[in-house]
Image 1: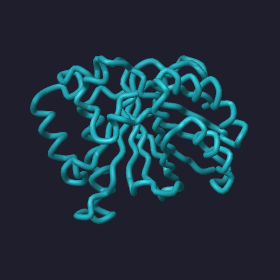
Image 2: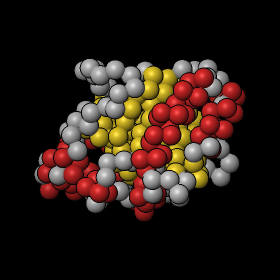
Image 3: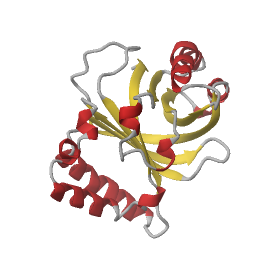
Image 4: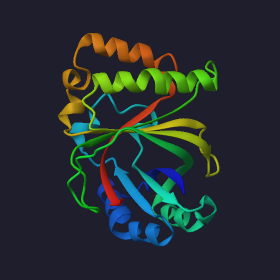
Length: 227
């Protein structure tokens, strides 16, 4: 079983509501029919209140959505990518390895229903100044436990990129899905960080393995189409 993540940008003539409807109401079933055994969709449709958040950075400001899916074999992804291309102006696909430092074990809503809360969706490359061993040691060994300590995280999924699978995809090495129970957990700095001291700790730690001008973050809603 292999996990793929596709970063998606809607067509310019579509609203984000059009994009969400087409992705979830029209294309999700095609993705399942195309071989996806599990499917989760994120859409940047939280509206103006969320768009004003400083957590929208880099390409995250224009990202329309993301699809995470699992295939028996990534060689069989052609129909998946054809389906996504039909509703996107641009897409970047990645083969990833998933780890879940914190799972939402108390989930009580069905597949197909919009998940409560909000997703902070982040992706970034490995800086040239950092070798592989240091990158993963800092990300996994230092930043993950610090994030779990400081942020009011509901769930936390790390995706280490094995390689891009679409032409022209930027060489991102990390795709992170952080889930929060309420939008205010993210929009209120004191709820998100807890204290001014924590902001400094988080930023100092990030800068040991991330070039912040190359990091990209969006706020999105989540729908687990098939778990």
